[in-house]
Length: 236
Image (cartoon, rainbow, N blue to C red; front, side):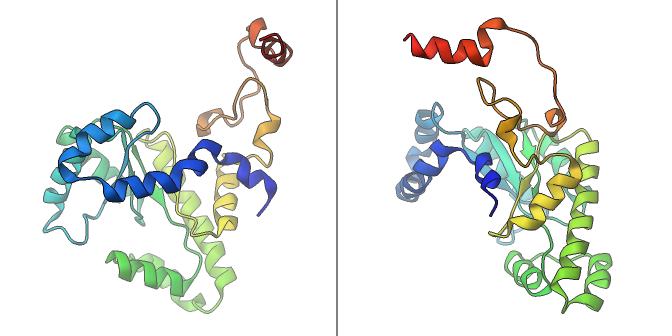
């Protein structure tokens, strides 16, 4: 992986993620609301959403209600499981808003990178791949490079539709430890910088919103100049 890839990670989150997962596994059901409230200062509780409905839930409407219960318990935002059409996410978004879910909902994007991996994932998640995708993939199912090229193009178009809908402020990618396709997609969308820290290392952070990726002008606050920022820490 390129060194710049790791610049997008949050050091604090990497350090504590393993411990946090262990705590979640041990938590008692009756105390989860208090647990979420007590951790709100350090962590943002995020829950999964299922645009097609959870595979183990009786029906879609019931699953949406369960999602609202989780939000009411203290979840701060939702990341969806994979889907293949922007219209699926848009419907899910409006269904959530209709029943009173007001937290941000971030679409989860899975780049198509191989026929076998796609087959295994859809089997596991019990999702049906749309016919237009299968018609495009089947003739090239033994050519991973061709499928990846198709997957990148398909994901770029879907992401553009999602971003242009005005309903989302970001995208979540399921890379499955294969970051090349995701970087290509983000580059096509104008959301990837080879060296994000080169924009302004101090005191500003690289922007997370795609709307600020081309930003090159910022308000002038003399106390926030890199020189002033460094000096203020030296004198403390």
